[in-house]
Picture 1 (cartoon, rainbow, N blue to C red):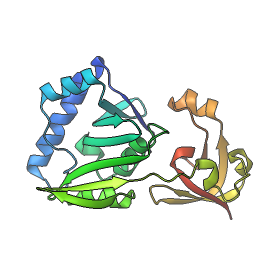
Picture 2 (cartoon, one colour):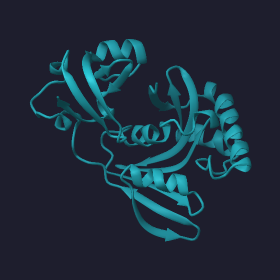
Picture 3 (cartoon, rainbow, N blue to C red):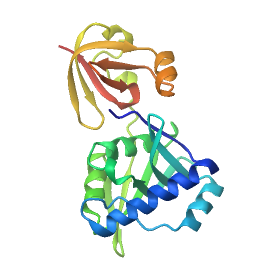
Picture 4 (cartoon, helix red, strand yellow):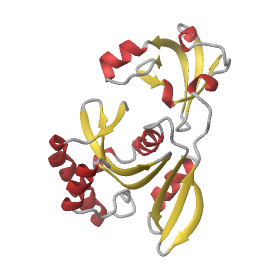
Length: 222
């Protein structure tokens, strides 16, 4: 299960992030087509990004599985680098990572990322996450996304319906990643999710699958 959390890196994370980066780079060298999410960044640059506050880590539960470098300028985010442990590739983390960055600051009006022309998987991921190819500079494609102004409350089948109203109902949950789940639903309060996952959101559960409200695109009773 994916319980992804994005947070700013601390000095205690640097050794772990360096290990993840080196593993990702090593895997890229062996199989560039399967693990292209990582571009070159030196250990020195990692330390510099930690110092200037642009280095972040991804946790699945309590385990750090990757990192990213992005810069927040006014209401815009520019993503410079993303790297993930190779064993977590191909499991749906890419979409969650992109959405986590998008939702990091509620005031964000635009996101940009420059992707190498050889990085077909990252280009496909950007397009799936709603990014638009706006130009090409040298060997890079520049992507841009203007986030939707829809709030999670507007993504329910009834704009006035509270998430808790789906408790015990049979529902169809469509995620922003494109996945769809159906079944009997349980409501999870924000206090419960915070205690268990350290995420300050309410959510829903079908069987063993937990969905935070920021991941949900639409909920429909069936």
